[in-house]
Image (tube, rainbow, N blue to C red):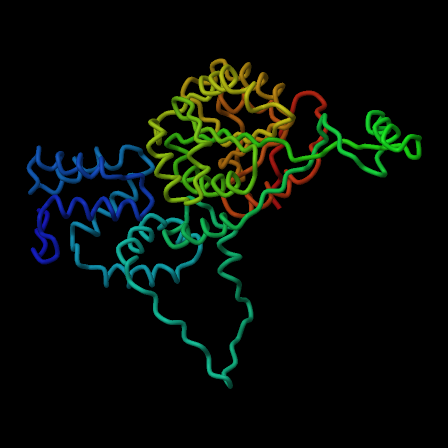
Length: 408
């Protein structure tokens, strides 16, 4: 039986459903007002006094993906058992924070729920040590250093917020490439005949030879990011990185794809990240759905490649390669994409596993057509990506072959 809370704390069922959906949203699930209304309607259509039926009805509306069920179950057990138990939640979160890293990774969903329930409380002021007190710093490490190597999937709510803040401070410096245009330069390597003649006509005699050199500028950056169910957690965090890049640079184009392709470049141009992500949420209809990589790339190659891949564009393809269509037409579309850009970098969060092997049909179809194959699962991998793109691209000498890294 689901207990009815105190009326002063909001004992009406729709109000409790609203608070429950807010808890799930703070814990990282993509839940909005529409899902809250659907959850209230689902409870109204069943016997809400049955805990089993209520759990199944809410899960059908609020946790439609398998990987979201763990967070949902933890939130359901904590919230509907005692909606006023935030003190217990904060105590459990404090105890859980002292566990070993591998245990904390296993209980990431529980920590996100517990921190979300106690997220409205102000943190205690930090106690400063006395002047004569000595602290033993032997075998200790920085919390920021630990955060940099932590997988996005294993982060708690507070760690995700800290990671997003760190991502917004990152800068992406692309290698500058020569363009077709020239600029005046006294020590340029080319003779500027029109400028030389204009000076001679103005002065009445030829006194000096004007010179010029090619202009250099960073190439356009095009990002194709997978937002299917298996990529939801990573896509939500990487959007902060893409928002920062889109507002710090010109000629940045961002596309999201699941079962269809959506251009969100205009939405990410908004300076306020919350407003930008709200606009993205309204523009993208297939968040956390299936994945049709070949169909999405075909749509991009057909309608967008000529518009955004000019002047030696760099393409970042962010996906795990798990294609719903089994790699159908994927190899052809990847080959066409590679021939249309200067550099094609595939970012795959599955590379975080030491035993990763390209067994999926989609991965095997895509892998021969990329220039670099990199992981993207924590802050260190994003910084490594920024360093990679700031260096000259390696020469393209045939088909790419990837060798898994050997364990140290």
